Image (cartoon, rainbow, N blue to C red; front, side, top):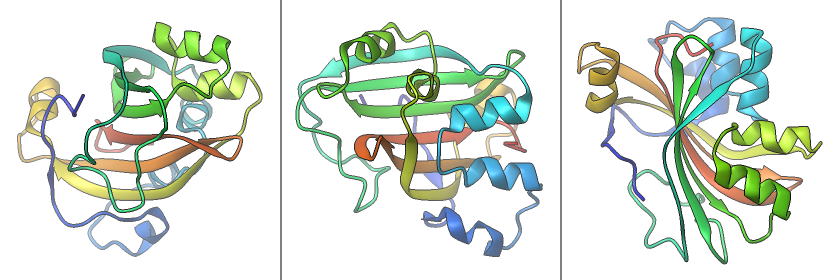
Length: 191
């Protein structure tokens, strides 16, 4: 499952650690903290918003293996594996409105059965499922970019030329690479 829409990058992906040096960004301290969060984005957003993060699946399926890299992944963002991969597209919300679109590609074979079953139910954010089990979540190769995403602009009723913040990363659980994730922040100020 590729992304259900296209993204048109405006510039290259860059390491999240370089966000402070990117010219022309009008980001607040909370915005920068969200974009550069190297742990569970769900936990960070819940602390920032003061309420639970909701999830609504846009699509989900398990495939035997991934075919090709896809246009949104960098050199180091290798597909998870070996074994079956869960492809998941989800909207994350703050209880009032959608805030993030997340595309995940997760190796499911090595996960404990209760977590695998909860993930496949699709009712809770991935970060919540892992942190509730007291598993550590880390991001590696966290990179940011700005992109035009006409589908999302139409969904939100904003100008098609609007730029969205995007993140891509490798997602590790207890130090083991488990997934690669692409997130697109729907609001002008992600924090």
